[in-house]
Amino acid sequence: MTNMPIKPATWNRPESGGAAEVGAGAPDDLDAISLGRRIRHLRKSKGMTLDDLGAVVGTVASQLSLIENGKREPKLGMLQGLASALGVGIDQLLGAEPPTRRAALEIELERAQRGPLYGALGLPKVRISSRLPMEVLESLVGLQGELERRLNEQVATPEEARRANAELRREMRKQNNYFPELEAEAQKVLDSVGHTAGPMSQHLIADIAAHLGFTLHHVGDLPHSTRSVTDLKNRRIYLTQSQRTDHDPRSVLLQALGHYVLDHQTPENYREFLRQRVATNYFAAALLLPEKPAVEFLQRSKAAKEIAVEDIRDAFAVSYETAAHRFTNLATEHLGIPTHFQKTHESGIIYKAYENDGVTFPQDHTGAIEGQPSCKRWTSRVVFEVADKFRAYNQYTDTPSGTYWCTARTERSASGEFSLSIGVPYAHVKWFRGRDTTMREKSFCPDEACCRRPPSSLAENWAGHAWPSARAHSHLLAAMPPGAFPGVDETEVYSFLEAHSG
Image (cartoon, rainbow, N blue to C red; front, side, top):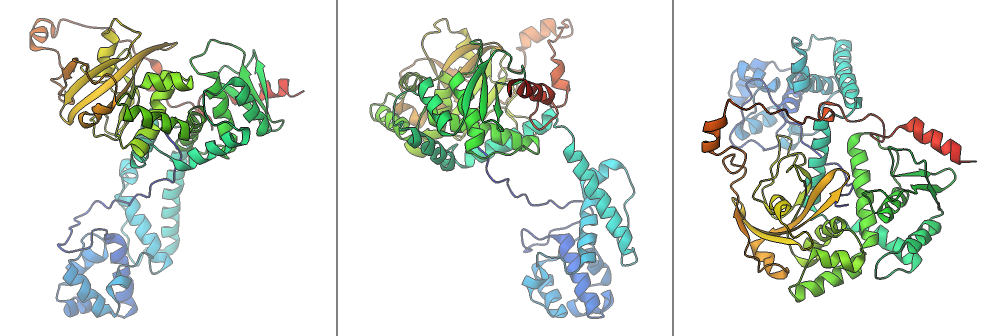
């Protein structure tokens, strides 16, 4: 509930390969391949040879050939000379659009052949010249595009999932995890039923569903791979009758309604699926803890220097995790407090994380934090050893990126025990209850000597004499579940709806 769908980032295509050199003073975003093809087109349209153009700009034909083939970027002085010799302005020379269809195909093929996908195929590179037939260019570029399309259609791998989550978390950080458009949609729903403050009851949620035109049906045979099923044809929402669930039934229903309110369509890939899911989580939290009363509550707590996640939990009758997530939505935007959040399994593995306060989370080469081991000296790990489970555990931790104060609780679920931790930089601890704690740790992570590498005394005694049998999980080696809604058995869902639609 801390994420939302926003427009995908626009990435600049990297250029690589060959003997490309960046000339001093050249524009930072110079596209060497496009520039080279444009120079070639303008030169030939003027009937000039490489020698002719070289004589005008004061360089040899071989150097111009490297520039035209995108293997060298000219310096600013050379760009000015080329523009003058070709009778165009520098802006035209650096224009974004290729001058002809053939030039566009040559550029695309050159980029493809320099890219990692083509390199992985182990195929020889095609020499791109004016003698290469147009139909060959069309075919080669078309084949490359189709290969990329088919690869993108394959089921998502765990690495793809991690990349998508890491990308989404970066976007969350840019907006301080606060999304006014989702807050506005939630407020419209709240206004429609006249809810202004206080915990949200099941009766009120039923009123929201009715206002949106849905009826609620609690059943005992909900498909095992789902938490809810929405019948858009008959405008019914099916929920489980079972009380044995790790999820607040109010959140499950509000998330189901969120897909309708936010006008979600069937996701085309895992990234879109993830964005939709976290958007509905945010939407549900904005209903359970409405922005205006939640912010007023937090502002009063800040003024009293008594901010505490458990107070937020109790005031709005939500879980500790929901309260912690919602705090990250509002703390920076409305209170000016940067923060971080962790949900960590008892094994030490981070399941969820968010930060905008400079804390250094462990991450893999994709930038993913989820799945990484948390430092054993952090509050999120130390809290598991605390005997008193009825109070929040507070701790200061000195890290390479600064000193942080964190508060944490543990909660048990079907998947084991988890810690839920909220932290802030030392400069902001003055607003929180529990700042007077004397508990303090020092972390050197990501330095392996901190907690990942065994102490030398233990290593000397046991290195080479231990062979643990790892508790490996087969799902770690598998691809993400296939389908538009990963992990959901569509046949089971359709059969369920067919059985209940009479």
